[in-house]
Image (cartoon, rainbow, N blue to C red; front, side):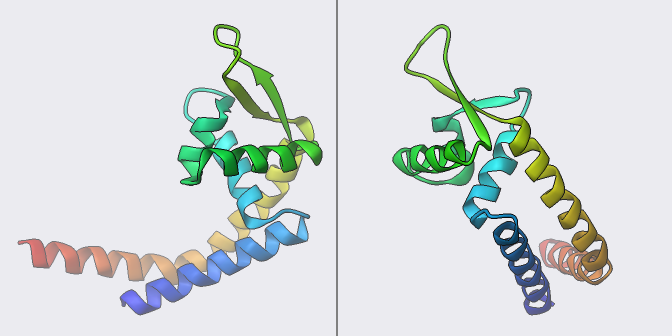
Amino acid sequence: MLAAFRYHLRQFLKFSEDAAQAAGLTPRQYQALLAIKGFPRRESLTIGELAEQLQIAHHTAVELVDRLSAQKLVERAYGTEDRRNVFVKLSRNGSATLEKLSAAHRVELHQLGPRLLPLLQSLISDLERHES
């Protein structure tokens, strides 16, 4: 079951990478847009927070934001209390790109869900049996 579950996850990740590349993004750039959009309770986050969300080094996040900014997918703003803080938010173009990719991902998840859900439920049931 675990092998089948991992196989379907890899299928989804491959789909995601291909969809990002078709939209002119690297998979990491797509993940960055998702992290910015999905950051809790704010529409922007610091580069340090983005690095934490993506589990990458701070300087790697800076380079990533530089590339996204050059593509006009994100905008930078300096903190009002501490100008050393650089906040990143999606631009209008970035939001539109992310919405198109998210729609395609929702369709793929809808198709993959009926195969993935029973495997996940079986794995959880198996785990619960072993914990009892």
